[in-house]
Amino acid sequence: PGSGEDAYSSYNLIEYFEKKYRVLSIDYKGFHDLNEFLDFIKELSVHEKLENFVLYGFSIGGFFAQSYIRRNGMPFALILSHTSSVKSKYIKWRLSFPLKITKHVVPLIPNKLFRKVFTFLVTGLQQPGHIQDKNYKKYASPEIQWRAIEYKKRFEEPLFDKEYVESIYNLGIEAEKEELSHKSINPINSKNILILKTDNDPLSHDEGYLGKYYPLATIKTFKDTSHLTVFIQIESVIKEIDVFLSGLGGK
Image (tube, rainbow, N blue to C red; front, side):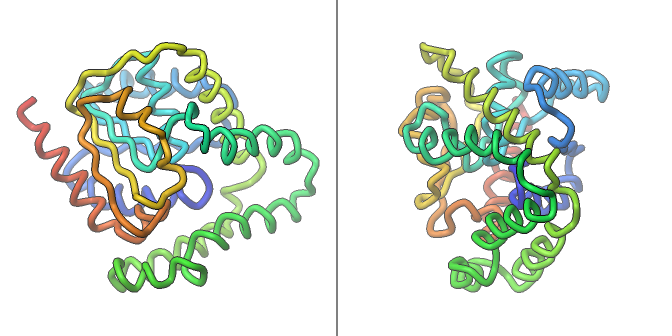
């Protein structure tokens, strides 16, 4: 999943796809080392006896998914949703640099103030009641609009505490270092890769790197709904993933 409130976008996907497949979702909380986290995923696949599995990475989860395949090779299939490359200048200055600063500031903020500020920054900019209202009305069914509001309420629960946020920061910074250490691009020539992005999503500004990494990937670009496409246009997202997975059947 993604981080913060984005993690809730996975619930709609899980609810649909667990009717067809076995679905495992991982919480980042408690993981502070990328090696430990990626080893856990690998060990989990062995423990659960997963001969073929599809690795899904959304937002910052997409960076972790890419770290996984650099170390362990391609799984049966890979889905990268609204993610990018840390080599992108936009990601470097608008995401990576602030993360490094925040990592040192978070421990100094009192818990009560931290929750207020963090909740405001994430939910205040991402959910109904802000600039995305018109897109919810345009693209989302009444049920999806209702769910989005419910997810916003859930965000007030103590899931997203300092330990969770620090885990995200530590894993994210280590994933950045790992990608930057790969000076040359070794393309993965697999057709079993789906890349989802939105035309006005700043976190999809990969400057062509994903195309170089995965030249045979199927790329689907949505419109208008920025980083919230997995919330607002969830029916369309599910349809694209469903078609992709169905096409893997005989491979």
